[in-house]
Image (tube, rainbow, N blue to C red):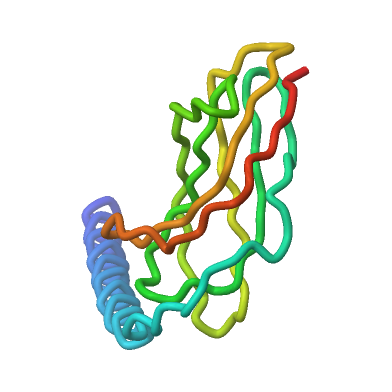
Length: 148
């Protein structure tokens, strides 16, 4: 008898817990949807405020970081690094997703490049684009770093 009572109690608790999870999920989705703002106006001119600079490099991986004025447009954005071993041939591309904060006047981008060769000099420039692939028109001067 106690075993059957305990089983009914577990079923009741599981049902209540499931109902709470569904309610929290619906609340989170509705409050999340309500907080999404429409796209901000695109900046007249997107420019690099700080960087680009090598944040770190080790074990075949490098991270390039830069700050630009807030490019506006869609919240979904990508930081782009075009790179290669010759300054006139930036044939490789790395990109990292970012969500813009429309309340900030600037945006910090960080892009990770993988499978880099050791003791090799890489040349690069940076760009950013909206989630739909539209470039923000940012092209930095070419910079370089050498992997350890």
